[in-house]
Image: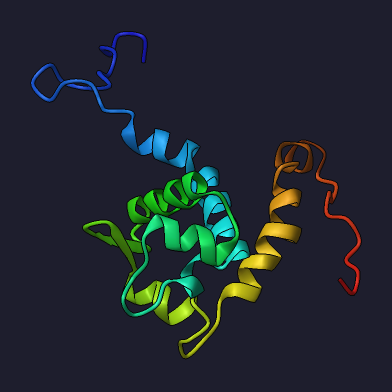
Length: 141
């Protein structure tokens, strides 16, 4: 094995790999937490068939306009909202599952993941290192 040449990680023709996919994975929790906040504030439910401006979202969701715009922009990047001029509209899957008007409401599941599952996953390294559970006792709430 010592007389075998070292294997190249990339070829000069192709260039080095780009880190974009890895960075997206790093930032995944930010998208999830923004989605959970949008659901808590009722952003998807507040967008009607005519769409909504950031000012309308802010008023309907009782959050600052700057926050409404930031959440809406991030949800556009995630593909859950669509921007048309100064208005935001729900993407079809967001309308069906996150606005409370579709065939199945995923908002209770999102609340569970945000309030129960996410805090547990913040201690994932401890759980993997020790092989001991890190989830607190579940209560009626």
